[in-house]
Image 1 (cartoon, one colour):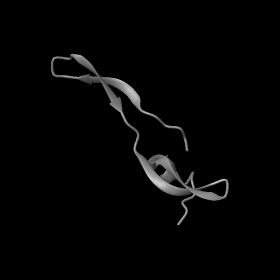
Image 2 (cartoon, helix red, strand yellow):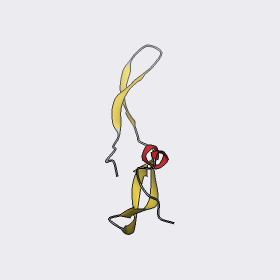
Image 3 (cartoon, helix red, strand yellow):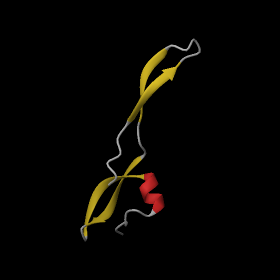
Length: 57
């Protein structure tokens, strides 16, 4: 719903060598109401916890 995607950064080893890594968002596939109709969509857990989406049960 919030169009959240992966963030990118570096992994730092003990010798401070930088290698690429990605931080994946915590997305869950849940049934939600979209324009009054239920559908299964990926929603980040922050939006679920904040109540920004209405779960369909």
